[in-house]
Amino acid sequence: DGKYFAATIQSESTNNFQIYKKNGSAVTKVASFDHGASLNSVKWHPKGKYVAVSGYAGSGSSIIRIFKFEDGALTQVGSSTFGATAWEIDWNKDGDWIAFGDGNGDVNIATFDFDTQTLGTFVTAGASGHSQLRALAWRPDGKFISVAGYTINGDNVRVFSVDLVSSSTPTISLVAGHAVGGTDLGHSCVWTFDGSKLIVVGNGGSFRGVKALEFNDSTGLESLSEVGSFSTTVVGTGSRARISSDDKLIAMTVSGIHDKLWLLRLNYDGTI
Image (cartoon, rainbow, N blue to C red; front, side, top):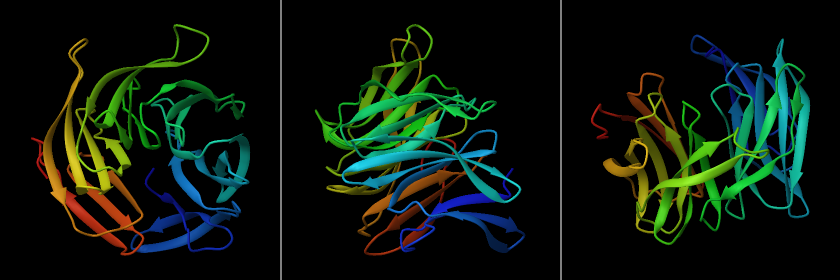
């Protein structure tokens, strides 16, 4: 509903997952949770009542937690631990499936029943082809998942079709890939709301900045092609991008050595 936003505050030694309420130009913290270790990703459920976070759990393991947010309070309703690093997480369009990319390069998917507040068991839907899968995003129509990470075989960014119904476990199939440069590219990828373009942020190697890739979703002819780019020389340890609901603006951050925020215009043709 646009009234609240969630944040991971890495500089906080406790209560590093926080919920804020926006009221005009004022922002007030209304809830927090002490995860106990650094966090990698936070995503609101499409219905707005739940929020998922991923982060470290100590001893080389990671954890995903699902919280219910109601009346200004956070209540944990589900969790799952893993041996590999759990990087970016995302919900499908209906919020009954949740996916994340891990430090082994796999895409993992589980069910979530928001009526009974039950998180299912995560299963590996397939390997992304990346040595580390840093970024993951479900296309708004729920038919595809995009991933980005450390390059293997030339592609930094890949798109997979998602099959949630044909077998007892979810599966993914590679349909498109694109090399956008940079050995450390893949800190963030996000779809435009119309699903026509993929916005990818990189921060390493030969590319630092954000690129717009147009996605052709014609069956059997799926492809990614670069249509826009914005480069920066700022060095940081992590980068994220979000896009406005009208697909006209991109907000990009770089944190680490320098903390920076850019607001970029995305034109209809994909140029930035």
